[in-house]
Amino acid sequence: PGGVGGGGAGGKTNPGSNGTDGTGGGGGGAGGDSPATGGTGGSGAIVIRYPKEQAAVDGATTINTAVTDAATGGLITFSKQKVIHTFANPSGSGTFTPNRSMNVDFLVVAGGGAGGGSDHGAGGGAGGLVFISGHPVTSGTPYSIVVGGGGAAAAGTLGGNGTNSSAFSFVSMGGGGGASYNDGHGRSGGSGGGASGGPSTSGNGGLGLQGPQQSYGHGHPGGKGHSTDYGACGGGGGA
Image (cartoon, rainbow, N blue to C red; front, top):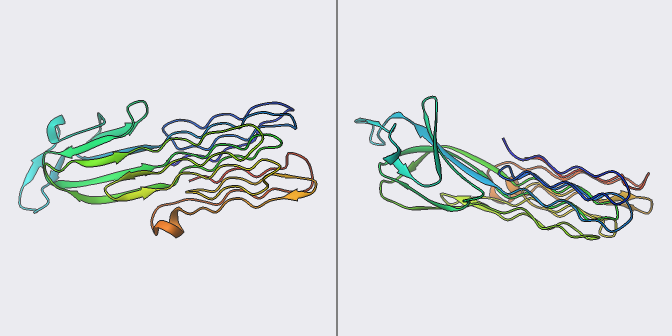
C-alpha cells in the first residue's frame, strides 16, 4: 500500500509526528501558535517480486527461480510462491541485477512530504505510488534502484517535499510539504500537502501530480484549509 497523508498535532506547542519510513507517509503538521516543527516525511521504498516458478520470457522453457541467485540486490525474502527484493532504509538505494531474463512486478513509493511548522501547520502529502506488472528484465543487466527520502521540516514555515524514487525508468514523485499559517497553500507533489487554515486565511491543498505529470501511478491532492477556526488545516493527500 501507499503512504498515508500527514495529520495535524493538537495543543499549543506540539511538534508534528514523523511519517513512517519505508511507506512514503507524510509528516504531521505542528500544532498551536508558538514555534514548533512539523513532522518529517517518511522515506520511500521499492519492492520487486517474481514467481519462484515461471515461464521464461521466450515462453519455450520453465525456469526455477526459487534460489536467491535468480537476481541480486536489496533484502531478499520469500512469500508463498514469490521471491521478493525490498529496497528501503537503512540500506536504501542499490542495484537489481537479474541472472535470468524474466518478467517482474514492482512497486515504487517516493518519500513523503514534511508537515508544516506552526503556526497551525498542515499535514504533508504521501509520496507518489507506482505499480507495474509483468515488466521484462534482461539477464546480466544492472538496474539502478533509487529510494527517495522524506521531506525536511522546520518551525514556522512550509514543510519540504519528499524526494523521488525510481526503478526501471519509472518515477514516483515525492510528496508535497504541508503549509504553515503564514504560507497558506500546501506544496504540490506526488500527493499534495495540506493547506493551513484559520481566521483571515483559507488555503488550497497542493496538487497531486503523480498521475497528471507522469501519466502513470497514483497520488491525491492535499486537503483545503478552512477559515472558521485556528488550526482548521487540511491533511496531506494519501497515495
